Image (tube, rainbow, N blue to C red; front, side, top):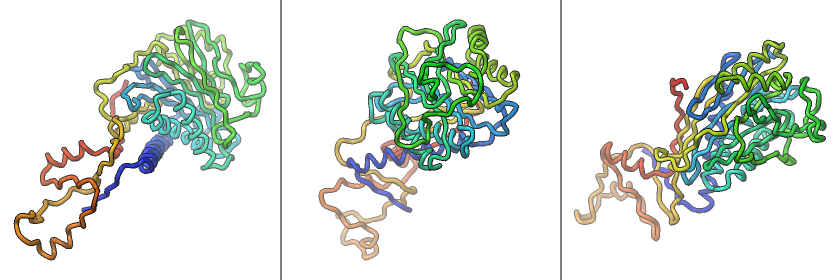
Length: 388
């Protein structure tokens, strides 16, 4: 039997949030690095979205990572975060860099929104944390791109870009690049639609402290869909891409066709794509979300992470208890005579001006009651078999 007690204070709350974020990021990274098939496609019908990834013909390893996450902030407001990361060729550990960038990005954002109402600020902080995580692990010798689209409660949509992966807006057969490539040509306003690796990147996730991510808001009146692509997709003729997107009946069919077309055209690089409709319905005030959590979909499966209850930290110091199930309390009461020497040895010394301990429990119902009151996170990973 072991108890871990901790009083809430400003320093502990900060440590608590960082610790939970690191745990969540670590689990997502491990999941993204699992062994998968050479190609995969995942439809998330409830979110009007889909993701796909194809290793291609030339590469022996898929160094792209793409996923969709759904969660809620401290106030219970839902968000959808779609992101894609492409490990940089010619540098070390491209797949691990991409997984680290994406996993840290998702974990950091989910942490930030538990204490910050401004989702755009959370988006920026999560990007910088992903950058520092990759740089700290690979020392600037490995890196990845990162593009993302965030749909928050109220229909607010923002996009993010670092590197030369791209964010597109699709309406009918018209496909418009929204992001700016972090290359000399991109910064000069010249869009290169063909070819791979024609320019060196000016910045990337893992470069160090000088990162300046591009973040902007979508026009709230815009309709259609958002596409995120790695360069293994957008090296294709943009007119072809627009026709495929415009004539696809749903996001799932669209991402599959784009990945397959890239392979049919020689598959010179890993080809990954994500698509989400701008008119996706998002619940501003979720009723059945009592706990913080993330649902994440990638082209090969689904991950669920359940964390702490989505409620504010207590304003006054409160004692929390963690550990194994305690044994029944056999200590005599104060009215039953003097205590034995053994009882005094087992009984902790009382502390002045401290909150009283939670009562020890004797049965399963009381154990469940105590677990409901605990605010320290219970991390749980689920791998459901449900296919969307």
